[in-house]
Amino acid sequence: MLRYRHMACALSGASLLAFSCVAAGAQDIGSVISFGDSLSDNGNLYAATGGTTPPSPPYFNGHYSNGQVFTEYLNGPMQQAGAATLGGVAIDPTANQNYAFGGARTDTLTALPPGVPTQIGFFQAQDGVFASNDLVTLYAGANDLFAILATPGVTPADIVSGASVAAQNVGTSANTLSQLGAPTLAVLNLPDLGQIPRLNGSVQTQFVGTLASGTFNAALSDAVFASAAANPDTNTYLIDVERVFSAIIANPQQFGFTNATDACLDVPSCAAASQAEQNQFLFFDSVHPTTAGHQLLASLVLDYLTAGEQAVNVGSMSETAILDRYEGVSSAFDRSRLVLADGGQGSGFYASVGGNWYDRGDGERMHGYDYDVGTVRFGYDTMIGESYLVGGSVSYSGGSVDNSPITYDTQAFAADLYAATMLRGFQLSATAGIAHADFNDIDRATLVAGITNGGADTNAALYDVGAEIAYPMAFGDLTATPSLSLTYLHFDVDGFTEAGLGARIRYEGYDRDALFGAANLNLAYATEAFGRPAKLTGRIGYEDNLTSDDTGIVSTISGSPSQASFAEFDDLHGRGFVLGAGAEASFTDMIAGSLSYSVGFSDTIDVSHAAKALMTVKF
Image 1 (cartoon, one colour):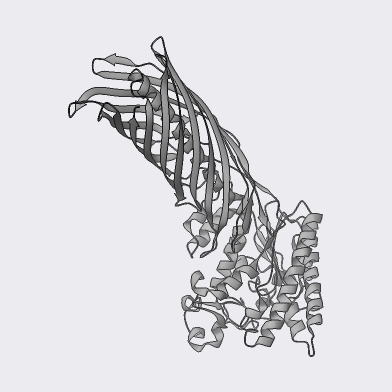
Image 2 (cartoon, rainbow, N blue to C red):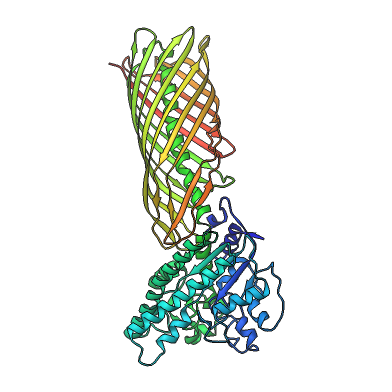
């Protein structure tokens, strides 16, 4: 029994991004059970023909390729269940089963190779029962189209009609497998046949090949969606192979190929080369991919199967936006304490420039990331009477999330109001704020090497309210101010849909709430600098989210009838244990400034840094 993410990790050694090895909430998978033609056949036809078809070599051990086919890359070695059934040999029903035969059609017109409906009958004879965590693959239709195109005097109308019938046959087989209890079904469409070596040699053959596969794929989509709607207990995925293979042929170097138009076996230097050198070609013969192409195909299937798990990484949007808002809250508390400590002398217009850097480690469900953000803030506050401070600020922040499967740029506009007073020696502060956050150029590194889905933007609204109590204690020139604070923050982001060649994930919007608590000991040592009053400051504290939630992301895949998936986020955390140092100075009677830096450590945010420069002007 393997997990989808373990399969992705096995492929990652071949070329997939290491990011693929972290998939939150990965599902267990028992066996892969495959039906189809030579694109899935792991040697059934070869065994059934006594080792004659396909000739091996040049083909690899009865595979229509120079190595393993995509079905084997999904979950390891597979039993040649189709050939075993023909020979009357029982199989292990708990292991991977391959019933596909090279040359198979979508119907029952030939006995050998057996068509897909017959293959399904073989499964019923051998096992007939799907386990709840089995993955079923169905890939067929090309042989029907090749037969139609080879018919003398065939017309475009004949091609359209025949291709539609073949697609309906696949839809019928999908329905049959679903009714037999297939829990997860992956149906793959065809590449543009006009672009494969067999048909890309002339305008005429390109036209009929593209017409055939285009018609088939359109009809297949309708048939698979209908089957999925009729069988809600089966999670049916429609894998868009055409989109990816067309991109590879248009730009093979992006995907690690040097040739995507010729058959390796038709080029003597390639035919005689090592497997690694042959894998520079997309096609091994005039129809079938090299094992490198199959490896890419397997990674595409996995990208669809794990789309719901990968979607969990958009949880970083709520984490980064809430951390930004909490920084705004903390700035208001810091400002209140600073002004009250000087008896209101430091109130007035002020401006600050700051930056925060977060290194968020891998969580139980979510991949880690780096987040860098800079903030510019302008504010004004004033004393009302001798003990009441009121103020407000506006800020702009811009940053980016990197080193993660999902990356994006951020910008946020925020406004904060705050008030503070002294009561029996205590400093009491309250703050409220709102923000609008934009997430731009959202990219997801898919499980397919060379493919990044992107082109998406979204935005979020946030609001917060907080309160702090502090008690300054003077020890000569040293003032120690312990403080406690609570802040409630709310985040609400809109949904969005990816564009790209991989599984196009459609993310629903979500809300998230947090209650941050902080305990700090703030230190200030009064001194002088260049004959002017100055302070050396320090901070020892701890801050974190005091609540846990079951918030997560609901996602679907655009263009696939697969069911909506829910992935729960990791718990939201703050900076943890924080150490800080800084300095404040009065440059003139009207102008003062400060510099501060802090570093934080926590189990989730491995390390965080915050630096800020503040300038205040009194009028």
